[in-house]
Image 1 (cartoon, rainbow, N blue to C red):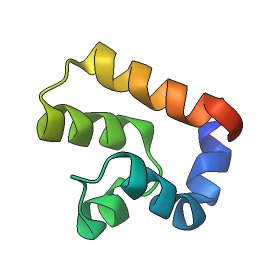
Image 2: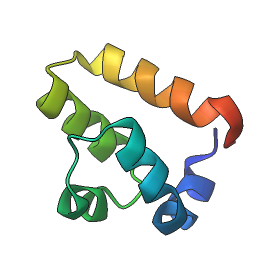
Image 3: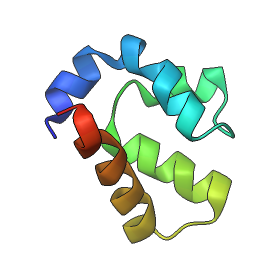
Image 4: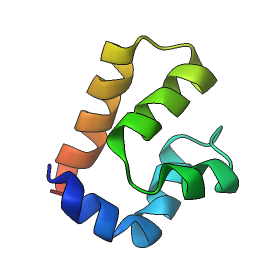
Length: 67
């Protein structure tokens, strides 16, 4: 997964991210701006996950077919 590409395509990917993690608000998705650390932090906050779990979930989601 290349986060430069994800950041560049964030506007296109936000819908898929919202579908996967529906607790994230549109404002939070805008704030995240395709930054992995911000997405991880929001997932930890919303779902009570550890940093490791949040990063694993993110990696699985974006490695699936988006890299």
